[in-house]
Image (cartoon, rainbow, N blue to C red; front, top):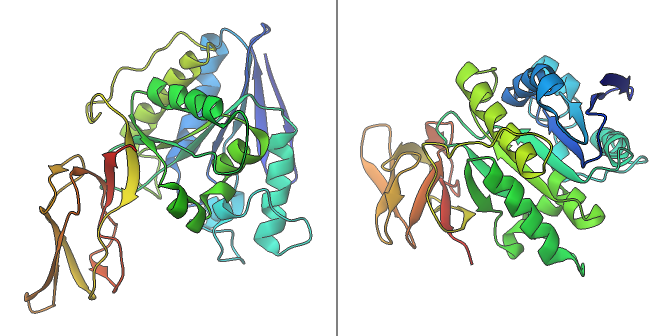
Length: 312
């Protein structure tokens, strides 16, 4: 059964199985230039009419409709990252108020789990991010393990978010998934798949399969996801920032997405416009490259790769 009601700016579609089960939110487009998730929601809207076996699913195709229309990451008129402002502030600036309206709309659905759809870059393997409980909660370990089950059910490489100090510094506890986990105790997963700015058909298909796998882990479907070909294998990993360059210049990556490296290996070079090597950046420890920046020129202090390191 399908029903729909809308907040002024955020459409949410409800699919009901008619049987008891978890209430699951699936959201996309909090960053307006990340379009793959919108395509995934459209695919799920059709597939779940027959695949949903228990519970309820709430589908939110775009949490930032104006950003989607204009192709901008942030909410037009406010350059702050909307996904660092939850639960928002109804008396704050434009993005604060929008975050508060989105938060109220989603919180009132009383979700048991949240799957948030994102994209990283055109040079990235797909991965599933598990947020951290960094605020005191007696059930913190249980929530995180439930989130890991969601991530592992996707078939993508599952990564714990940045270490707690960086997690707080980057305000990830105020991302939608981080706030849901830390404030409401809702297990969450962020699925990162595909390039920005277009509904890439292959990425939409991969992320749809991964989302159905996460729903299967919750008992809502019977569509387990196979391991993605890029999966890093057994063991748990965490996301971390690669080395930062000390000088501006042309970024020449030396290890591509999915490439493994050892401590001391060169990950990238910075070169001047006449071809001279300005800097060579080496790995501090062994790991795997997850994603590369979508730019040829980097400024001083830029991260030259997102990497996966053994979890700790």
